[in-house]
Image (cartoon, rainbow, N blue to C red):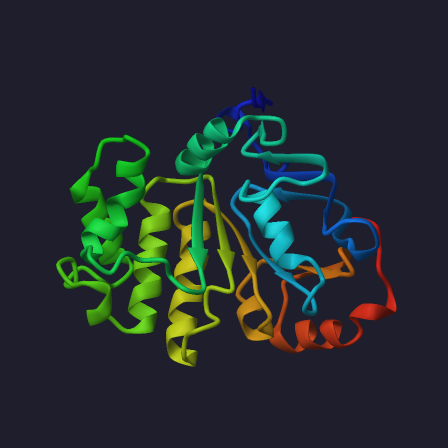
Length: 261
C-alpha cells in the first residue's frame, strides 16, 4: 500500500511540499552495458511552484520526470507526491493515484483524433470513473482560449491549440502536480509563449505545482526556478531565471556537479 504523510490539504506555509525525492537511483541495461540515468537524486519542491528541469541529452531529466510522476519505478530511493509515497505500491494503486492527483502534458499532445476537444478534455475523468462536470470543462477550455472549439477534432486545430487542449485535459482533474515533458518542443514561438503563460497561470491562479522538462532557456525563464542535471545528478539550481542566465549556466554545467539541492 502507499504510505501517506500529513495531508497537504491541511498543511500551511511555504514548507508544504508537492514533490519529494530521496536518494532516487535508476539504471537501464545490465552488467557492462548498464547506464545510470539517475544517481542518488534528492530534491523537494514546494506546492504552488513552477520548476523547470534542464540538462544535456542523456543527463537524466526525462527519467527524473518519469520516476517523479510514477510512470517509471526507480531502482531505489523514495518518491513522494502530494504527501503520498509512490514507491512500494501496486500498479493498480499507482494508476488510480496518477489519475486523481497528477496531470500530464507531453510534446506530442496525445489527443485521440476521433474525439472532440470537449471529449478529449474530460477523458481522464471518464477513465477514473469520476463524474464529468461538462460546465467545468467548458470553463477550463474557455480559460485556455478554446471556448469556441468544443466540437472541433484535433485535426482541425493548430499545434498550439492542440497543446492547449492537453493543458485543459491536465487541469480538469484538479491535480496537485502537473508534469510537462518538452511541452513547447513542437510549437512555433508565439504558440510556445501562450502555452508557457497557461502553465504559469495554472500555478499562480489555480495553485497547481508544475514540473517541466525543457531544453529551451526561454521556456525555462517562465519558471520560478530551474534545476540542472548532469550525468544523472543534480548540478545546481537557479531561482528567478532569465533566458540568458539559464543559457550561461548550461554552457558551464560540467564544471561542478553536486549531490543534491
